[in-house]
Length: 81
Image (tube, rainbow, N blue to C red; front, top):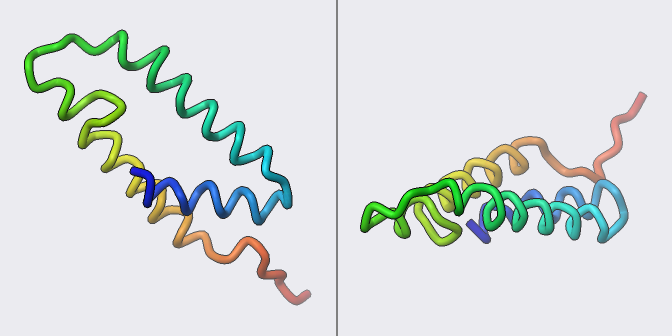
């Protein structure tokens, strides 16, 4: 998840020229996972490995986000008019 999300953090940081976009993304991520989703998940024994902050589901979602931002391209590249 960390590797995948690093593409989003880096892209936002470079595009905005501000560290605050990455700070807000990180805070929003922590809020959604820890405050909203984890309490909604019932523990069925192996739930921790699939659905929590450390589960395979979040890792897969992070990799998908990474691929999306990788395909968006260089945020510093300026198109010639």
